[in-house]
Image (cartoon, rainbow, N blue to C red; front, side, top):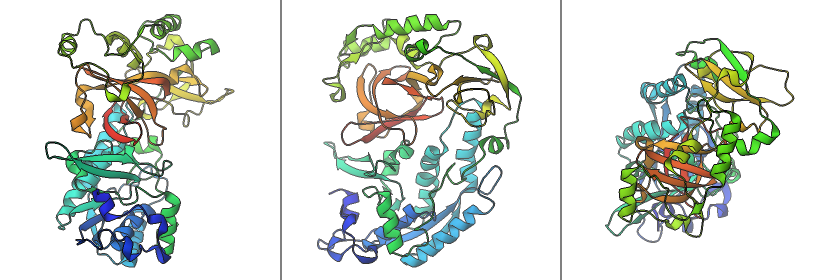
Length: 487
């Protein structure tokens, strides 16, 4: 039985009056149950509140730990003292459940590790995900250390995901992150940068129940957070006017908005290949067609000039993993993989200037709002940004080819394996399910490991792939998250 199942059985739908777990359902009640000391990251929201409630009802020694991570309200859209309201609600919840309440200010650490990183990434024209960084650097690092100082065994959060563990043939405990049972709320993606060490101390008590049940349990228990709306925007900062927020450090600079036009005939095949510097759309279309017509193979990619890869092939390290048996895998040269993973490069002469903007660093691929340019039948979207020349390129319509790519690349030093025991070796090819943003349905893809990094080629072109995002890959079936990396 896994640690998660020792704490909570998968029978929460059968909870009795007032949301209490019946005595016979308390984990280990009849087999020498030993309560654990657990700190819950109590945010004032309903999810963490119910996580604390269930752990308390299961017979564990639970303490609430509220962390303040941000003071500045510049650019926020919900008024001044939102964190104080959250703290008040969290205190009321802790009192109702009957657990000690502690407060910790991690705002300086949060600024250095998360917000400064976010500013730096936007300045480079990249699109970071601060929530992923917050979990890696704050909740399961700085916050975890504070919790351990209270003498706890574990830290629990209100994430909709699951964790289990097993002991391998070497006697090592391996921890796994699984998608939450509520597919509409699965938050495993936000934990894609966690390590085995961090997971060893983590608990996710609500991963096997859905949001309506969480709200019901909170309401039946009379918790102050039962009707509280879900938080939005940047983790611990809140919903912000992003340009205003970023202007704290990034100066506005007026630049041109250039529209790139595409015919209906160009839209579908054009998404198959990136436009190389100096290449016309017609040339890109021809190259895309060549890629589509290249022969299929059932082994690793071919890189004729890559000595390291050739050595791996000669050593017998290349072949189909269990994830791609029965699937015909496309064979690409290293150059073709680079082409599929490289974003389109535009020049002003490729389109028409249709307006001005306040700074290319304030915009991201796929963005629709904030352009303030009319005269189009369909909405226009950002399809590329040029930070050096301070130009943003836009295209009309949700299906504009500039929004789509078949592949992406993760540099070798940016690849992170949650399951280090499943790390891909150079020359290896695997099939996984991949997502590049929260709530995106998992996408079928093939992963190619090269000496310079990991290439992910999707079965279908993906919309809005942006540098700085995190790609996370999962197994088929159980949907276990195996690894992630920065695009």
